[in-house]
Image 1 (cartoon, one colour):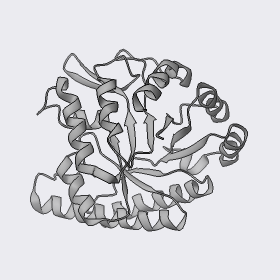
Image 2 (cartoon, helix red, strand yellow):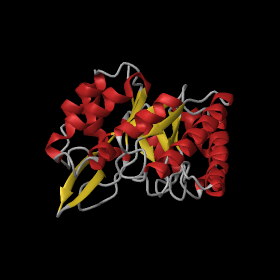
Image 3 (cartoon, one colour):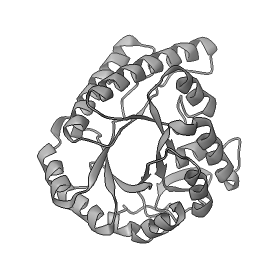
Length: 278
């Protein structure tokens, strides 16, 4: 049975009580986005206490800001790996369900020789992270990006073909946004289905959030129901993914006009998800 979780980040504090809210709403786990300063100043005992008191599990979303795991510049890639080693150690202490990473950089990958070096760097980083996760009993999950390298289906397939023992996270909003210039937003279910089919039995996690276009600008990570996503159809696609175990609500805004989302804002969404995913 697919488990449904809620993404939390540094803005969700005090963390113990927000995790309590997630438990009371009915989420199976929380996905902690370990953005700065959490890799260095997270109160691990607070998280452990919430896990113990509420029986709610934890997934880890590794940092992505200032991180370049696919950089062909050795010094930049090594600095990014150093941060990831710290995060994986933290995930091991918390006995996390998985560690979700973004593999990317800011290079001009439209040039084949540059893309080849970026792909090579990304593969080397993922292989090292996979080995570290295995040592801690963790699953490593690579998420599709929104517009940077490894946002394209073929780029992800290239990575899949060269690294074994690694799973994927399909972020539906990132998938739609990456192809928005080529595919109308009304055809978003087909885009999501193409990603799901390409990633196949490596697809372990999905990130769900709504999305829309306002005044020509793409907006995502919206509370489901405030955008244009066809939730029932997207869930039908996800139900066909046999390995899928975790669906995380990665929603930050109540709608295109803003307003921060709290776990209790997602009560109705959670109910609908349970119905559509079974």
